[in-house]
Amino acid sequence: MKENKIELLAPAGDLEKLKIAVLYGADAVYLGGTSFSLRAKAKNFTIEEMDKGVKFAHNHNAKVYAACNIFAHNEDFKDMEKYFKQLEEINIDAVLIADPGVFSIAKKVIPNIDIHISTQANNTNYNTALFWHSLGAKRIVMARELSIKEIETIAKNIPKDLEIEAFVHGAMCISYSGRCLLSNYLTSRDANRGACSHPCRWKYHISEQTREGIYFPIIEEEKGTYIFNSKDLCMIEHIPDLVKAGIYSFKIEGRIKTSYYVGNIVKAYREAIDDYIKDPSVYESKKDYYLNELKKASYRGFTTGFYYGAPGADEQIYTSSSYIRNYDFIAMVLDYDEKSSMAVIEQRNKFVVGDEIEFLKSKGENFKQIVTELYDQNDVPIEQAPHPQQILKIKTNKPVSAFDMIRK
Image (cartoon, rainbow, N blue to C red; front, side, top):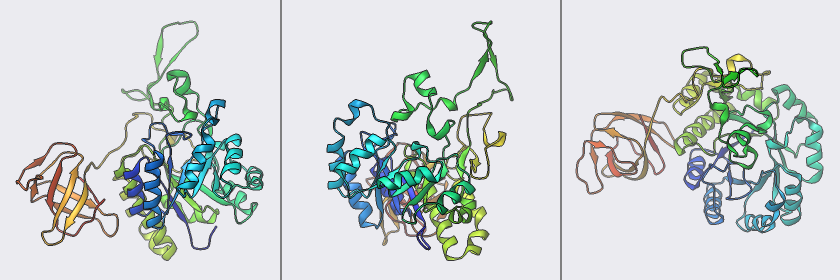
């Protein structure tokens, strides 16, 4: 690992989320184009949008990695060379690949662009890492099923110029390295081509072969049980172990999550990483604070996944498939006038005069205040903001900036 350097890698489902991730502290973002990416539900980027995103990231000293991690069928290779050339033209920093065939095309067409090997490629040992490195890979994304000790062993047996990336936060897949057939079988939506319908979050019954049409509920509480429903990965309390294991890039899952989720999670990890690098004792003293900040975004409870051994019963959620949501994202700051202390905002959820709100700042300390003054776009005083994406003005107690967010 590069000395005193940890890369914080964040998801970018669209251009707004890319900007949020970068402004809130990500060193790099990963995104998908409209083809060859494993997140069909993410809005994803046209080449023109990707070009804007790369320029924005580079202007803020951040990198952009393009996911090209489908397991390709024959027809997928038709426009692949053209697409890789377009990525090179917009100065993408790296491509993320799982399929050896796709890898071979990338090496031929864009030999000067770094290639990262996706977690989908089942990277579970150092011999696999050495194989990809011999072909020219710059980075290996660890399989989620690896323990801290296994990753540390891999790091000790690979060249220093081969980087290790690993997931540290976000949703967990029920299947080994994401190779799930449930979605394809039940809904004809292929998880390994980016269209997963998340059937692992559904409620199930069992049936007996000789009793056709009779379904027996799997009950733990009156609402039933969700037997495949994993808690979310969270490693913010274990940064020293991740660093010791040789992980260079800390990856956050969530290309289909909201802008608010991305900003909130990125900022918490940015603060935790910076505190740890500056003074480990400060980091240790603030663990409860980091965790509480993460819980202000939606989550399904937290687990350390496979890092400290195989997950057991406590890593599953049996009573509900829904998120825990303690805060609502109510507005995005668009502009701010220092003389009047008025912020121009875009409403995302309803709030009213008298509500206590909290500003999630991209830089600096967050702060709370009561909504005392609220105006519509024509400077007419109003008492509530009920309309999504309504442009409003609000009096703030402290200065704010564009892309700061408001929650309650």
